[in-house]
Length: 194
Image (cartoon, rainbow, N blue to C red; front, side, top):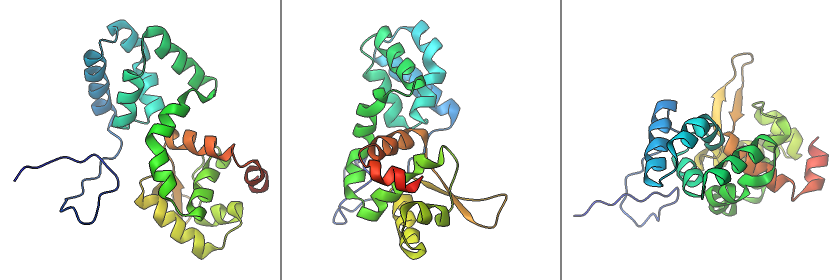
């Protein structure tokens, strides 16, 4: 009769569970969580006030990422270094990205991995299924199935384009950082897509 919260994207079908999706927090909710976590981790209040906007930007308002950034910032200097590295495009967030996404990435089909890592090629723009199919050199039907897979894993978000009659796909910055790190491991794919 005990209720247990299992914070996982993947639960055994044998476990009687009620799924609850936890999307990125609203800005004010993310701010409250960051302040609470900083207090629990004894992070200097002045440092938090100076860094709060950066922490929320880097984390994409994902609760796990907010907690990771704050809890892994051993001191004020470490947090500021992480933020500076992020601004300069250095791979300082690789550990965070690995922590948040590796499990999901390893469960993806081969084509889903290809499409996921190609999102950074679009430099923040939200591509259509057709654009992703061309970049990945896959047929439209395969890409459609792959996009459903990525949406189901909460790695991308399906949206409706306001300028054209088509679905577009968006990716959070944190996910994009992870995808970019994986794309660097496949330089031939990066060159072919561009």
